[in-house]
Image (cartoon, rainbow, N blue to C red; front, side, top):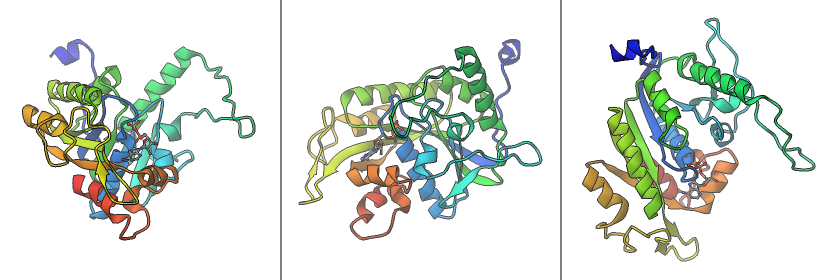
Length: 282
Ligand code: ADP
């Protein structure tokens, strides 16, 4: 076949995992990891056996989001044992590669003296380990936090493992949406079903008066219920499901920073609206 002639590895199922759901964004900083971790925690809360695999090479954020660190141990089959918090198993590049840490007193970053070619090899090896040598135990769902973009890394991951569905994260801005549409195209070309789009930072809910402003609504209509433009309209045009809105809320960011994502942050009536937004998407 074409595949073997090109000497490409066979696409494999990730061992012990029923379904792999990739969370992806065309751009960095739109909240992909925040959505991925809250989705995974929403599944776990429903009693679904869930794991999250962070394949972001240059900016792994799952360790911080789940308040986990340290080197994973190897089991008797030489497979990495996931680190667990809030009932969610996790594995991340951040646990495998030495992370550049700023000096605690000066705040300066140390000079990276590792030769680039050697770094490339380490990354390739670590990626292989992440995709094929993690002892997930039986999982119903593995959420794959993909690196941002629609390039070679995403293609390579798709060539190595079977992805059962993808979730595209976007913000309401025109440019973000245009890139998200490109992302949908990539998954469709790779024959990965697109489960739908999530609109993050959809509106700002004023903590004082509760008024909702659609502050990023370039393409989207400023009226919350008029969906003739923007993300929802684009979903309709492409025949992709619209999975829901996540509000722009400083506390979503605070929850993330202290390693206690919104879905598992402490219960209170006041907090429940934004938690519900994540649960609804799941
Ligand atoms: P990405 O994975 O796309 O690079 P992150 O999930 O790391 O993005 O989010 C980028 C920053 O934005 C983080 O500081 C995160 O806490 C913050 N953030 C993400 N979503 C929201 C939201 N809905 N409200 C407020 N802050 C958010």
